[in-house]
Amino acid sequence: MILLAWRNLWRAPGRSLTTAGVVALATFVGLLTFTLFWALLNGIFETSTAKTGHLVVRVRGYAEKEALADRLFPARVADRVRRTLPGAEVEGVLGYPVLVAGEGRALAALLLGIEPGKRNDRELIKRHLVGGAGLEEGGAVLGRTLARRLKLAPGAAAYLFAPGSLGQGSGFLPVTGLVALPEARMEQNFVATDLATAQNLVAPGMLERVEVTLPGIRRFANRKLIEKARAVLAAALGPDYEVLRWDQAYPGMATLLSVSQRWLYLFVGLFFLLAGLMVLNALYLSFYERIRELGVIAALGATPAQLMRLVFLEATLIALLGIAVGTALGLFTAGWMSHGFPMIAAEEYAQFGIPKTLYGELHPGDVAATLAFALLTTWLAVLWPAYLAGRLEPVVAMRHAGA
Amino acid sequence: MALVRTRNLTKIYRGDGVLTPALTGVNLTIEAGEFTAIAGPSGSGKSTLLHLLGGLDLPTEGEVWLEGTRVDRLSRTARARLRLAKVGFVFQAYNLIPVLTALENAALVLELRGVPRRERETRARAALRAMGIEALADRRPNQLSGGQQQRVAVARALAAEPKIVLADEPTANLDSKNGLALIELMHRLNREAGVTFLFSTHDPRLLAHARRVIHLEDGRIVGEERRE
Image 1 (cartoon, chains in turn cyan, brown):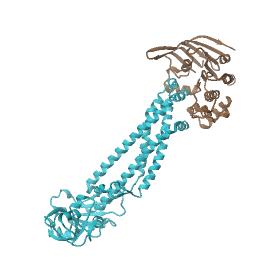
Image 2 (cartoon, one colour):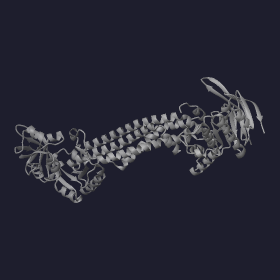
Image 3 (cartoon, chains in turn red, blue):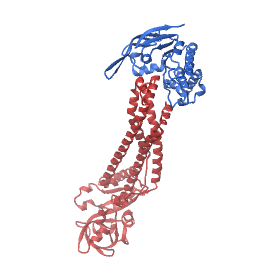
Image 4 (cartoon, one colour):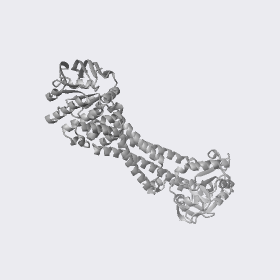
């Protein structure tokens, strides 16, 4: 039967190869889509965690606290985090809403007190610095747009006012740097200073959050390790604090990922549906042209099940041929993309946290799912011709003129 | 027990509201080892009778029995299994599978039966040898003459050692030389191996070899000759 099915494929090699090509294309697109999706996830993960770290510690019920002071906690909590997660980079951050005044006007901004030399300094200041020397003790780094609107240049003095604070509440800070951030909205209200200066201004010895960057985690697929660390830290800190993963701390990002995943499945599903219809068309034609011959085989004693199996075998062989080619192409492309490829329209996507260079990734589960889907699609496509083959009446079929 | 038996066998085709009787009240018995011809002009019902005897089609009325099994009461699958186990077919148009070699064609019925590859090749090769075309085992149908193709078709029917071979005008598409050779071959197989043949024909050369001739006209048996 396999021999007969195989030889049948080569009666019309053009059609068989085209059909296999459709399966190959669907498999290739499936694998490529997964590769791109993971690349996108990794890009968003990389950009987001560069800004937030992998874990964020805050006081429990942070979002519901009305008084700003209730959102703060002692800086020694950061030391407990360091002891619990040795090897992780732990940074205390003091975020607080302020008014920044320049020449003749004042604007609302978000003051970020960060530790010099640590991740926020590296990722937010040094990476995006477009003017001045950067973060210096007692100085302020402003978003370029904010500085322009306040007419403040490096060297000028910015007046900061922190309403309801527990510290000095206000003071002049010299502008020591300007940053051009990818997210336009963030750049409009960005002002950063060293943690000690921020604490002096807002709340001495206090933090608003602790950001944790775990060692060796660079891919979205490592999220289970992040969750494991989160659970350990949450247990160590007790009920007064909540420990959030990066995607929990910024739920907008998690929603984006979830929506992207649904679009991915919809896209791949539609593509496979189209491929299935094309395969059905080719297999039906192949069946129709051989009705007389199938009638002869039925007359010789083939049962309906055997005839259906023959048609299924042919479809399976076509699918396997297409899957082999599509998988080879898909794996080759995924391998190439894993070394990095440029994001299309990178400037436009930068504000959504997508980096300019993405790194493709493909997991065994994705490959298995794509192959299973390709095979299943082919089998669904062959159901109708196989059913018709099983219903053939030998005498009627042998009179058929299609062969 | 008769190998084949029919009682009041009737077949009426229905098409576009028109009823066309093909067979009417045929009563027939075939014993094992017979070499029987069904003779009659075109449209007399020869092919229909063979189709009904082989379980390829169902009668409108009447009964068909093959080795004690009532064929017309069987399901589609059961009829297929009965054909596979007990009936060999030879068609007028050879009906070989074009993508298979002569050997693979001859082995096709055995393959459908699930016979292991080595055994079915041995048996198919023996059948081709009996037909005198073993040397052509690796050729495909389009590389064979009409006579050679029909020998492969007979080999396909014989390789599975059926209880009866039903041949529908087996020499109709052959020239006189090949037709005669095929007739002698079938006759020899009947005499020496005891294979039961029931064939339809209006070829007088084939009729001359038959030990029993059943004459069919307008779907009815109108006469019968027996020769020793």
